[in-house]
Each structure stands twice: as C-alpha cells, then as structure tokens.
Length: 268
Image: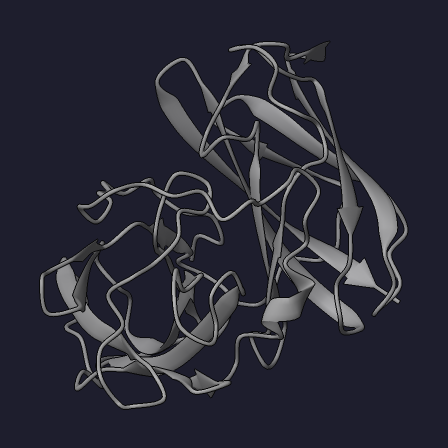
C-alpha cells in the first residue's frame, strides 16, 4: 500500500475572499488534535458512514454552530475556505482536498478511490463570524470503505523520502509538546532544488498524523514566499503534541506538478 498520495482536483467556495491572517510558521496548535467532531459549539455533521471502495466518491458534510444551523461564513486560509483531509487508519491513502459549498452550507469533497478499511476525514476551517470568528478548527469523523481491509505496516522512521525523482530531507530533533526548529530540504539527483513554486501561498504544505490514534497536526513553513521560485531549504518551528511515530506528508510544487512526499518521524 502507498503511504503517499495522488493530487486531486479542488475548488473553493464562491463568495468574497477574506484572509484571516495566517502567518508563515504558524503551527495551528490551537486547533487541538482534530480527533473530535465538535468543539466550542461547532460541529462537523454528515449522514455518511460508508463510502464505496475502489472508485471515486463524494463525501458531503456541514459545519453547524451553537444554534444547530449550518455555518456559511468562512475565512480564507492559504487561499481556501475549507481544507479537507482523508487518511486510512494505517496512515495510507492520504488525500488533501478543497471542497465546494452550496448555498445551504453543505460541503462536497470529491474523494479519489478509497481502499477498503476505516478512514478518518478532517475538516479544517476558520469561522468568519460568530463566537469562533478568527479561530482555527479541525474536526473529524470516521467513515468505512467495505471490503478486505488489510493493514500496511508503517514504514520505519527515516530522515528522507523520495518522490517523483525528488528527495525530501527532514532535519530536527522534536520532543512532544515543545516547539523546535525543523528544516525541510528538497534536492534532485543530489543537487539543491531552487525552483519550488508557491502552493497555497507557501513553498510547502506539511500535514502530520499520529500513529495509533490519527491525531492531526498542520505546519506552515516560516520561509516567506518572496518570488515564484523557492528552496532548497524551508524552515519550520514545529510542534507535535504527542510522542511516538508521526507520518508526515509534505506537498510541494514544481512547474505545474504537485508532489507529495511521505515519511515517518519519531518524536520523543
């Protein structure tokens, strides 16, 4: 089984854009671990508990507020009002999507084919009004793809990973619950890559999931986007809240191609 991902098409919700002020280097630590479907009056709701395996499928959901009504006002974070993730229980099959919202507040995420097994889906958003205005949330639910669900062993912790001819190297000794510097470097054929193109207003998008409970973490590079070419080194102030193995998915863009590198990081 592949512990990486395949890029998927995405679209943003219609309406007037408003940036809620994410800054390079934010670790979104206030979002919590993303394992609950409700927090501070906001809830991720869906009638879907099963999705077909082996073919594309749409997952529909709403974010409701304290009054139980759908929330329709969302701030823009990294050019999108909603970031949606899916990961299998063995941390394979990673997908990062940008769903669309209709006038009634129902979001639709068009998932690529799922392998059989238990999956967790995450909605990452920031309300643009109400009591949660300006606060980052990650809520999640589980869904099952029926079939023969064979688990893949988590690859051993490693300092680098290869994808599409590129090598991604991660440097930094992380301790749970503490912020530490971390550097991600991108090379190709042993040479530094300096043509990283901006993706979602950064040179890289990094998402991490904890082995066992699938706790969620989202890291932004501190390296500012100052041109249409970046790299090879990207600096992070990284905080992962739990010890153990984390599966990291680093997405970066060269030319018109989005690449996703996956590696296991051990946190003390």
